[in-house]
Image (cartoon, rainbow, N blue to C red; front, side, top):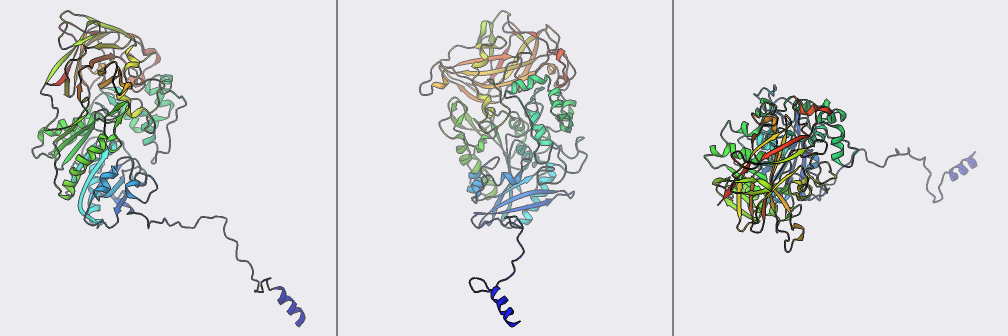
Length: 633
């Protein structure tokens, strides 16, 4: 027995002479730790994610980036529906400026000013609780039966921040682009005392008059994809699917915008149903238009409105707020910046706009010389030398310091003339310029194939600055061209269209473009030879000729007057250039087609409603068409 025991003991020794032990329980087949710890020692900032409670108990997800060693730092807040977590972690970098290098942040200004950066998901989006309502109307209106809105949420957020971020100096600024520009404006309604400055950039202001959803009643059907992706899910995970490579084909295939919306499942979306029910500028739009909302009370917070001259999405908003508030600004709190940019390009590189070269990074100059000192002045009490209006003048490619806007003292009429002429003297005898508008072959807003909206390598941001020559030769586009200029013509403000025209239909759209035609050859920039640059262009839906608040049919064959503004311009038509005006009746597929037969709802027009129409534009005589240009002599 002893020998057997000794032999067994020997067998239990390993080859190395150590005792053998039973193997431990095999680990789970997973190489990930039960809980991951992100290494943060290399970061030059501290990241905090908190859920801030609002007055009704709803918690809003908020990301706070605090520079290491910060003390007495001001806070810059953005409230967004576009994912606060993603907006504050752009490039997987431990460097705060790189982590913020994307939509809405202007990282050179944020980190250069030593600011604490705060980005918050609005109600119902991404990490925030609650329900989502597009551009949520304000408490006290018939459109909001609750006790909370973007103004109350901003107030509650700022109140929490100044009490719970010990590195701050108790001062908060708010900044944002587009939708985030709208929430920035909303913060000005009953603002928190700690809100010291606001910078709404390219804000959504009035979705019917000239921002995202309509322009003067014409529906911007590209918005359908945005409506679907933005509202269908909390995290934008349901994408709008388009099988066709050409957006033109996609929108033609379904006929009306309403038929397309039904096919794409958008009828499920509450906001879409509101759009269908309010196709005129009725109380639904007027009650929530931010220029009207803000005009009801004095401005209490220093504010810089930022406008882009070629803003392809919200070109109406900032100037409308300026117009509404500046006459009441007795304390000089309101400023305006006007840049040669597309939507949101003020925080991006901006030495070019499509084919146009500005000879310098205009946005970088503006951020350094205007935005940064403006914010610092009100958040850190530093000196500021920022003009009431800072405006870039295209043509001369110069920044201007102006005391007010518009800068033009009076209008000068530019007349459409017979045989395609254009000049500052009207034609004495009555005449018309005629064309046939065919909904089956609409004029495109850019050369085909048309791509859907997008920013990464997509032509969408710069289409307003596209060369207009591709459509100049179409028989359904009227072109009026002036003589070669021997002296500059400077405009500063909104050109106003005075169009007299008839249609053989009972409804019609009118698109008018003011264009700078470059010389046939441009030394040093051959691509610009003969270029037709649209300085300002827009669309007007004829059914709203008498009143914007109600659709009414047009009298077929009767010359009728249409008056509407083109977007703001700050431009010099240089010697050697020519001024051009184009008139057409479709702008597809960006805008839905007018059937040219009056129907109660164009969004639900049937195939048989779409008819050809003979369009006659008056170009002489007492009722001759013209554009009132804001000319600076």
